[in-house]
Picture 1 (cartoon, helix red, strand yellow):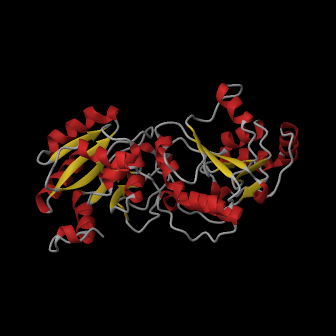
Picture 2: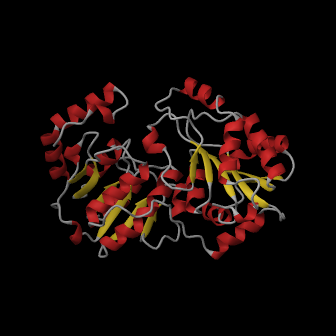
Picture 3: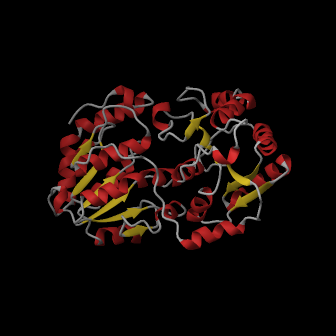
Length: 379
């Protein structure tokens, strides 16, 4: 047991809760022993393990980079992953997983929880390094004997393999550290998301109308509540400039529910601009992005899909969070935001409004000099 440090928390109330949880460490340990009929065991003895964490597509996506090393380090263990749709689609055909449970963390007594209890898992890996309490409580309640997760924010009494990151790092690095501790592999592998599109997914790219220009992906919508956006008129200016200078086709991508918003944006951009709203599956999008020239995205699934395709992606970082955690984790990324962090919603919009088209234009030209032949300058 170690006391949570204040720097790990955004506010005093969460810090106090974490401290109270450490005072209750003996009671939490006793509760977990009562809930489980089996004793903890070393990783080499595990035969079946469950991964549980966030329901967001991006969080599932960027953790796929470490799954090959988890499977290689524990070759006798079968790994199951719990994630609802549409995030579960990022795991389809993943050779390092044996099963995907396509639902969110179950409520007590539900059929889904009974199904997971019947699986008789040897271990559960709680990979969410942020809002982790509900996952840890679920892990203990279901009686799984080996519980792996992060203890730097308290509740270490619920864990048998607590991890305490010693520094702030990009979110995908936390899971890499977890896998490293379990397997003994040095945490030096690439954090690039790994997706496995099939031939049918590549065929989905034909759903877009043919064009003799290269595609540039725009992901300008997000499911995150209260997330603020770069002004629409700036995206319009950017799309028109890209078509004029390089030239390219702008493809406004999102889910079916985004169609009306994207169609409205398409009408303002004009030219060779089309909407890709719900036309493709998640793996279909991944296959299509491999054919694109670059992408522009909010800090959402589109950013991580572009990273999986090793596509130059210019993105607007989540200003509500710590910059070192939501900032760039791959060399193909360009963060378009100022270094501010923990910004409240009102100030977020002010900051985003202050990012001029000229500043974004400059960063694009640094990566893709206009004087050079565009098709030969992907990176």
